[in-house]
Image (cartoon, rainbow, N blue to C red; front, side):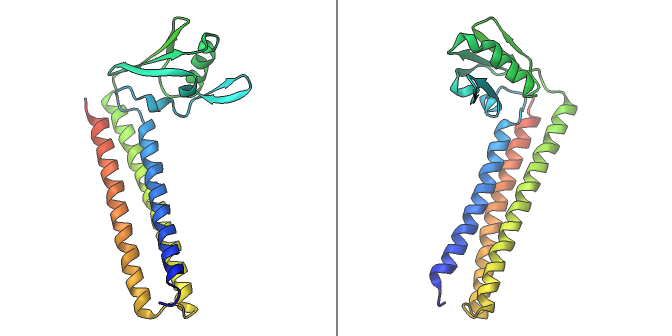
Length: 190
């Protein structure tokens, strides 16, 4: 292989793309409500704090005192109502209650029907991730094909790289499947 550095660069870029896709899936799964309180559900809730959109976790202590309750202790008491409004507007499926100092989010037990809907959502996210991974593989192989066409790779070298790319793909697809199964089990747990 003449341009070993280029081959390594393409493979590293491909593996980074797969890792990003998997990390994105994991972060999306953290936000999905599975019947128990998870502080990550507030990760995408922003409050207009003196003109700056600020995440709730930068404005308060967030704790989980019980399996189905999140308690938000706001540092700036004047923002309690604003945070409550932002949580209501965020459509996370829970109505906040506050006593002027602390906001409580009590999660109702999930119905069987709702659990099945969430599992569908989990599977859909998993499939979207796998599509992103397959697209990354296609892009990587296209670059290798171009290198072969430009006589930078021999037929044998290309075949070897194609096999390596598939092995990497299989590894990340199985990691994706594992995350998906774990989340499905968590959702279906009563």
